[in-house]
Length: 337
Image 1 (spheres, one colour):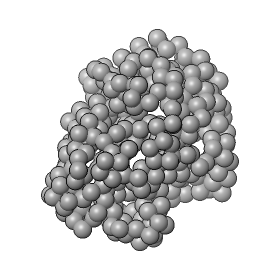
Image 2 (tube, rainbow, N blue to C red):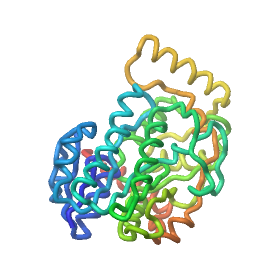
Image 3 (cartoon, rainbow, N blue to C red):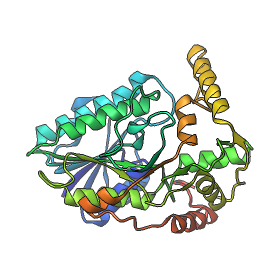
Image 4 (cartoon, rainbow, N blue to C red):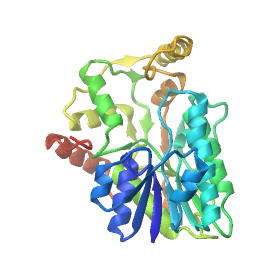
């Protein structure tokens, strides 16, 4: 089968492309740049902008399924830039499905679409955790719009499913862990609150496996068609255990210091104001949304994903840490190292 993967050059995108190639599929990746790692495994690459409908429709020609993984992520930027990539881009992907009569769309969403300030989530499912309201972060706000569009598009001709992996990490991460390591070594990491809030995370192989499982079960009228699912390791740990486990694996100093939530939130307000007013380059070190995320318990029930498409995380948290430590020790913890 010929499959289009958007954002195939990213962390999860490369895992999806590798896994699909290993399963015998022909893969086309729609990216902004060119990635030698994809070329090496026989992935055809098409460069383009998600916000351009003609580019998206042309890239999908001849494909029978789409893994729509690309998005503008991050904690800062104009709402319009997030809307163009995440909302317009998803609308264009749905248009490509209709034009080429593509029957399957697996969409990579985020648990952030359900964010509600400091409201904790313990064992939640997509049926019990409602969408967020008045979302402060443009990433979460635009992903919510896009997820709703994907699920609403599900019908007898196009089967869609939305997966919400929580905090993806592991071998090959060139974003989250390198930044944490840099800040830990500089002594600039603190827990927001006491660090005992429990959170879910998702090892990279597990995130990819959930996509493959959903894809294999997805069809018009199937149990997972038109539905959203939280995805994780199914093994919530405290923020302290999670963060310090990752830092130990990368040979970085552990975090012990804390910042009260109220102070972190106030800092977020101040940073957002400064970055808007001046504006300053890069992302602010703290935002209101980030403070709320870091201080709040969020973990999810994997029973719906297991029931509807057989998702069982193949790599445990501890095994993932062992793999990560081995990769960093060998200098292969991130792409291009």
